[in-house]
Image 1 (cartoon, helix red, strand yellow):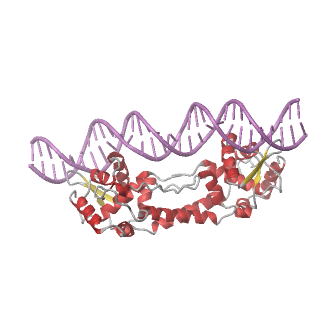
Image 2 (tube, protein in one colour; image 1 turned 180 degrees about the vertical axis):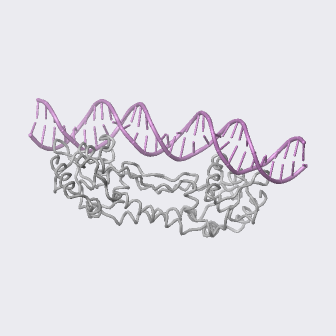
Length: 161
Length: 161
DNA sequence: TCCTTAAGGATAAAGAATATCCTTAATTAT
DNA sequence: ATAATTAAGGATATTCTTTATCCTTAAGGA
């Protein structure tokens, strides 16, 4: 069980977009080049973020994507769920109903205990990811990085907005 | 991102095995029939549990599997990791190193902040699953179930040990 | 001696992840 | 106007993982 590589990509993209000035857009092409990932496939993931209401897009030259809201209002979970969907990682197939001793037509009163435990763990995971915003991300990704590299990266991005 | 169906299967199997008397074994065939899942494929998963030291197997007629230790000493996480492996759900590919502004040969001082957040969420998930044992599972799976059904199921199993 | 069983290797089928390509429509710059 | 640029989305291909199935081997019990 492993997350899509797109999750890593879009989180890095969000960090970049967090640094953009108001109403500036950055194109998929540039985000793909900056991160060394395939443009077309990254595009699919960014479309998902757009549909989830996390990004705003615009067409034409100088078009691309920007954040739809403040970085402090976008969490890791928002981004991940936009790409991965929000279906639980555990799919209960109710195999207890296959029990050969079970009376025909018997109806279980509650969800299977196994599913409940798994869903609770899922929720712990989500809770942890809900607690981190893009603002936190920006801080984490910049601290410890040489100022010269930060500056150069910033200029690289700004030259393409 | 979804867990293998084998995870559900072996958790149910562990619940059954928890109910076995000391030094009694139940065969893959019976576990597969009870849960209505393919015997050969279930077998692979049980082999994983065995290799992980959670189950003990024995050959020949009246052979099969039993728990290798007390149900209170086996957690959900133990079982899940035996089947799924313990590789983190987030695989950091270090795409920050693709940054075109990054000096050649520059070495990052610490793991990527994104990976750290993801790994922390992973740990929250694991922590939640470490907190539930097979003893807890037995209780959860039996409460609310009609005593007649429990009894019949127990007899079904005992008849095959 | 014969039957049953786990272990494990080989292989196949189905589905998901990872792309690539193309068309369309909107927007901007010239 | 026109041409260039861009996101959106459909179609398709490739690779990898999951989900099996089959077979052989060796061990244990009747």
